[in-house]
Length: 121
Image (cartoon, rainbow, N blue to C red):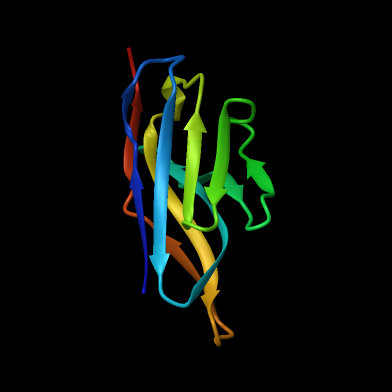
């Protein structure tokens, strides 16, 4: 039983900043990679940024230099700092986490409910 809850979405003007937060919870679950995906109308869900337990990061080319992902392992939280946002960043943003239950050979992928980010003047 793993739950991910996002917050921080909303309306922001082009060039502005926004910070998304996600808290993950789950008994006896080891979280490995956490990250953010987004889905705009008429488009497939795409990876925005990911961060490993050890702090390694990767970003979509479209957000490199503008967005920063970070995590707090002790709190099982992941953040996305969005700077210099553009209208094309408008999408529903989803928190993601994978990992495994202690004592299990199976891995699991978990998703939050999503938070809307709208970039508009």
